[in-house]
Length: 95
Image (cartoon, rainbow, N blue to C red; front, side, top):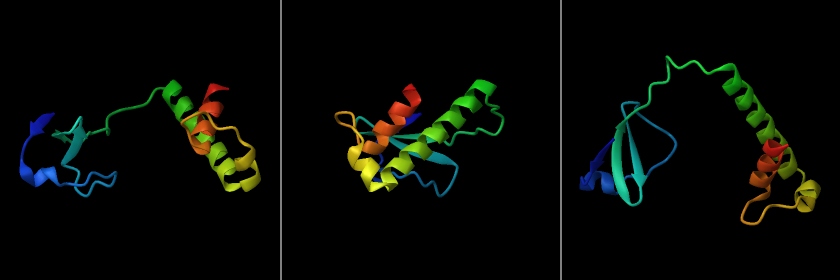
């Protein structure tokens, strides 16, 4: 990862949408970095990784159901500093 002081990148707004997949602009501790776009084509997840990914997807679905229902959302006890959505994901993952 290369650090840059180029003023052209200073005002770049970082978002999750990547328009070209050649490089990624990252900001860490106020510094701007350029790095190569990650190539995950040859990476094969292990069975445990696939299982954990599936469990996390179920946690997200559970949290979305709670947030969509105003009664359940109001009754849900969120962790201090967390939203109801993130608290529900955390609770599901710790079960």
